[in-house]
Amino acid sequence: MEKELTPLEKWNSLTLANNFIFCKVLEENPDVCKELLEMLLDIKIDRIEQPKSEQTFKTDFDSRGIRLDVYVKDGTGRCFDIEIQTSNYMRLEKRARYYQGLMDVDSIQFGQEYSALKDSYVIFLCLGDAFGHRLPVYTFRYRAEEDKNILMNDGTVNIFFNATMYDKMQSENLRSFFKYLCGKNSDDNFTDRLSALVERVKMNAQWRHRYMTIEQEIKLQVEARTNERAKELAKDIAKDMAQDIAKNMAQDIAKDMAQDIAQSKVDESKLETAKKMLENNIPAEIVAKCTGLEISQVDKLKK
Image 1 (tube, rainbow, N blue to C red):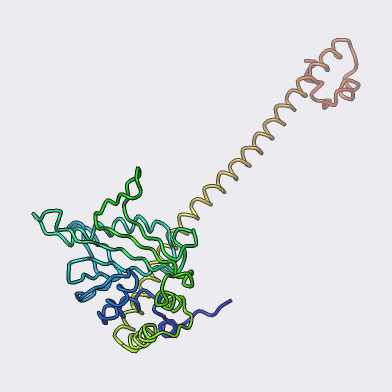
Image 2: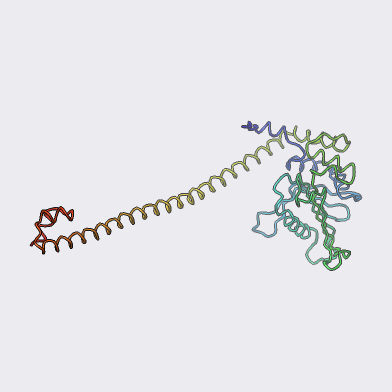
């Protein structure tokens, strides 16, 4: 069995693929965030606002809020959400749809025309294949069903990168970045800078404490949910066992009742036979012997 890492050992082993590290690196280094966006989208960005890691959006007063990993706007108002996804690729398309709506709400003021909505990009950096077609990247824009050449041009773009196919990426920069994200050595100036920034984050005592606190909270939540599920499962198992036991008891009772009924029928038949033998003046001892009845039972029939 593999030895479980201590919290400090786990912290020291983290890479850019870890959500906490990824968010801190981009939040603290806007120039790196800008360069990454330009590389991922193959676009030019003049400047960006300060990136916000784990930006929380509330859809109403009572909601707990939804967090985006890294949320940033450029000088023209375009919105970018960068999500790092190391596992659990189910329903990412639904998340992308929801995130697009959140960014729309954030980018337009009450009373503004819809034309004020800026382009928005939801970008998933996946360490696996979210759609299972072995493509290095999946880019989605709305098109007309009747003519695929007609774009809706609503300004929304959803992109899902498949890091495992890094060798099939279109540019050398992308190949180097995703190779590095997969934990492999990559000789590239940008990934060298990222590596150094990752180590700088890990040297920050305050962030280390914050990460360990979050990990402990998650662990406690998982344990609580596991215990609750275990209780529910135990109830279901106990119910099934009780049903099985009741079924077996019912079968035993039914068997006993059947035997009693059968024996009663046999006894009735013996008594009827004994009566007829006595009516024919056959001695009681012979009647008892022939029917298997007790002599006392035969004597009672004579009265």
